[in-house]
Image 1: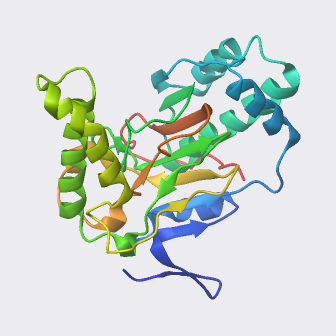
Image 2: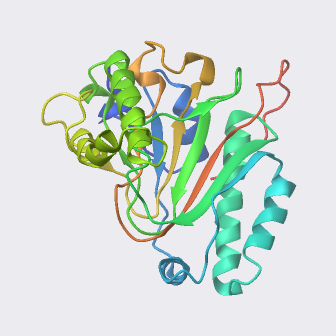
Length: 274
């Protein structure tokens, strides 16, 4: 993979640490899979939010808004946070809305899929790539508001997408076996240990390749894949391979992705935030 060069600096691994809407728009660059955008400083309200989530005084059941407009999201979020103190709910609403607006502006869409929840991480979701509907823009975002953040791997360390999808297929099968749906008690009992082994030494990575972690408080804007290309031998640089941490305290997680195709004719692009 050719490193991304910006202002004389090299950004290996397909990841750019940026700060502006212009940086996020660079996700159209070949080879760039994610833009990590940290805040200017850690805000005090995030500490209050973390306490509410960890102590389960703020609980949001796993929710999916399949094709939400900005008004739809605003209505849902105000309802979901109605019992949360304004000192926390106000800046949280602003931050989440800003991420939704940024994805809409960058992808040039008026509706997005929003997934949001508060729960502790488990081994249910290992390394994967996110998908969008056919012909939809492939730029979305994830934000972890407290607790352990998203983990990812460098493009340079991935052997191939064929190797990755072989790993993914096997891991998904093991994850199902570890649940209640398997007909083999023996297979189910051995599945958790095999999952741990797969997670600790992913077979699609070069030997001794590190697993990276998103910095605290950062939002990641990243490449998804058109669902029609999922499982195909596309270039590694077409997607951001990532996973949730395997354990930790309950977290508030927001995930946003385009939910409609690119318009046939583009007018003036909406202004992006940042």
